[in-house]
Length: 262
Ligand SMILES: [Zn+2]
View 1 (cartoon, rainbow, N blue to C red):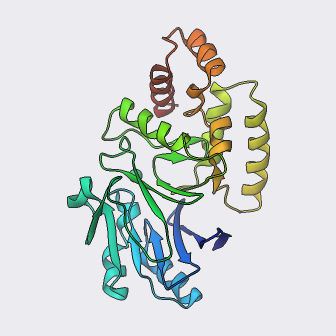
View 2 (cartoon, rainbow, N blue to C red):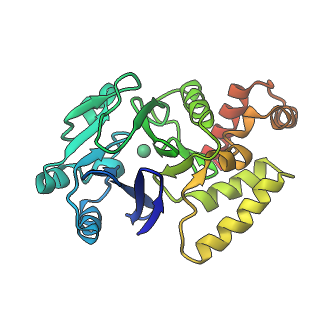
């Protein structure tokens, strides 16, 4: 477990399954201990024991099993309150409270904003708490989620919302996919110095068996190929190289489809 101090809370990062990350958010004031996307109840229980605190809330980003599988057991064990998207209430197990952009959850000690970020699934949401973003399977280190249920246009709009957050925002995504994503990134974004530096740094980090996550919005904007269409020079070069229209949605769609079969 790795821990990161923010002003009003601490984020504890727990590796789970093959490459998932589960996040425990411990408020500094009050008793709130919330978990984001509990893929596996047992590792969450161990972490709560280590912190010597009961789990109070579950925040789900989307319905996939590797984000919700622990809901039932954790609710039975702790009686915790389960929060998820109003637009996906039927598919999230044991949900108590439906939230949306206009109706975010109110949890003691935390200031939470909800962003609706459909694309990977319909009804996917992200949680922003001050300078921390919990984005599930929408944005990854140097990558983004597959477009399973939504359209490429929806996914692109969702990624733009995340890219508009403050540069210093920490990106707590739900998987450690960064190194394979960087291999794809290098293939489509040559001569990007920031990308080369990230490949070097993140490779070292993984060799030391440490997480490359959290990254930051600034780093993702500079190196993530799925956010690079926001930059005019990248967009023009990519459009010319692939003989497609130079608009961000077209470029994003081409990149996402290329990655699907890469
Ligand atoms: Zn997913």
